[in-house]
Length: 240
Ligand code: SF4
Ligand code: SF4
Image (cartoon, rainbow, N blue to C red; front, top):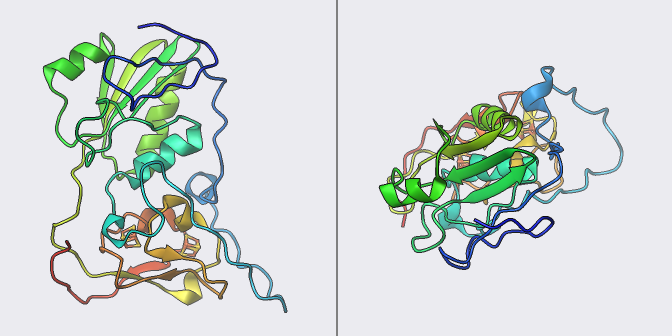
């Protein structure tokens, strides 16, 4: 596998025309969810006479900003983790058969990180492409575990292959949508970093969740240190 320092890998071109690249040391991007690591719940800002300026939710590689079918994607937390670590996610998500079988591949010094996102457990052919190295299986919906695993992989010499398998949720039954408990939301923006199309900042006192879009997956809930993302209790028919 050839190395071309300074060039960004295009993992989506073909399974034979690929290359990984060396990258500068990772600088974890805050993107709002510092609360995930910093401990204390951010205080509610002082009331201001000016209305809050609406913020854009984060954009995730592969995922549309507005497609309701893609709300609750099980790979949102994985994409968020890679984005925050500065790792391009140009390969295959679970809903994208035929693409390069790794979602991400990058190098840092003597460390090489590979990420597989499914939809199934990797087959022997994919394992052969990965080559020898440590394999770590992760829940793609666990942001804290994902961040720790990526940091470990980029600090460990040799190849680390993170396997975070999850299937697309389109067509699966949908749970009750979540809602934002306005009194508990301090507009920290951490939930926007997930890039879920159901979460919006409309410039009010709190974020909002579009109940017609939300799949009720609860993947946003761990990002909110104020426990402002809560279940509504109403059930809905299957999606798709
Ligand atoms: S529960 Fe949260 S992450 Fe899941 S679809 Fe609803 S708003 Fe998005
Ligand atoms: S819902 Fe939670 S994570 Fe989202 S802005 Fe409000 S306090 Fe922050």
